Image (cartoon, rainbow, N blue to C red):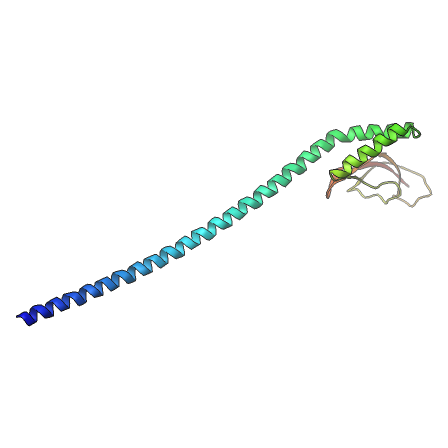
Length: 165
């Protein structure tokens, strides 16, 4: 009887050990699944964070570009007035200095004049409002009535020009 009890006790221990091992295996599998799931969540969160950073940088760049364009739209009529003053009084050193300062300010913020006189008409950059007989080849700009400007790769305002026939 003692032998049976010992065997039963030993059988119970083996069964308990087997159950404990199965529980540990299940926990390990569960932990591994949780670890995989947590790693996946981590990678997704990092990807989302990088996307947010990129969007923020793009939005910031777009806002700065929009603001620079808005300032330029307000500033360009003043530059046009300075250009007209230079044409009317080319010997006035004060107006010439003011023109240089305005051109320098525009260049510092990335706004450049569009080349016109002597160039072949390009509708992306130039708006021809008239044509005149000239010694220049056809569709060559012979006179600029209003300067055009670019900011980066964008045309802020096309040049208003007269072309040769």
